[in-house]
Amino acid sequence: GGDLFDAIATSTTKYTEEDASGMLYNLASALEYLHSLHIVHRDVKPENILVPDRASWRGRLTVGSCKLAWQTHCWIVQAGVADSLYGVKIDVWSAGVITYILLCGFPPFSSPSDNQDELFDMIMTGNYDFVSPYWDDVTTSAK
Image (cartoon, rainbow, N blue to C red; front, side):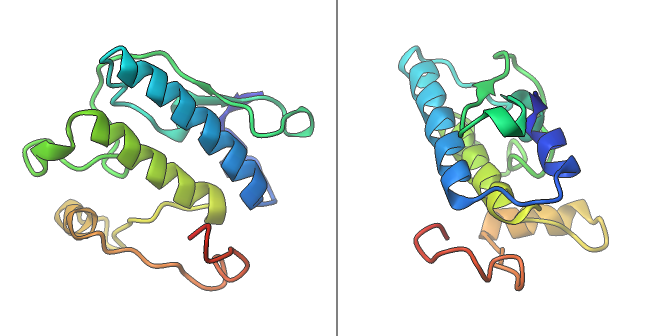
């Protein structure tokens, strides 16, 4: 077992759409439960999602502990830039980023020059692509 970040970083194979679907179902169920209690996780990212050993799992995961913490830029938009995404929507946004990563192996937003302003602009405008060849075998419905 371990966290999803390590599973993605050390794996030589991509997760299948079926694997991703199972993990995302469990993540959505966990978030739905938290949100029903009026709890916003605010730190949903691969490092906080536990997965069992690849050989023994079928889409199972555990969401890490709930805590208030500042998140990595890739997972959320900057507070103050998009205050409307600072409720339960931020958890849904993060789940979408995780979906993208599960299906292709890398995040949807990155700045080649590591320019944070450029990265935030990309996030705020939803400027991402389904880069070939990584997305070539992913079905349209998964995209």
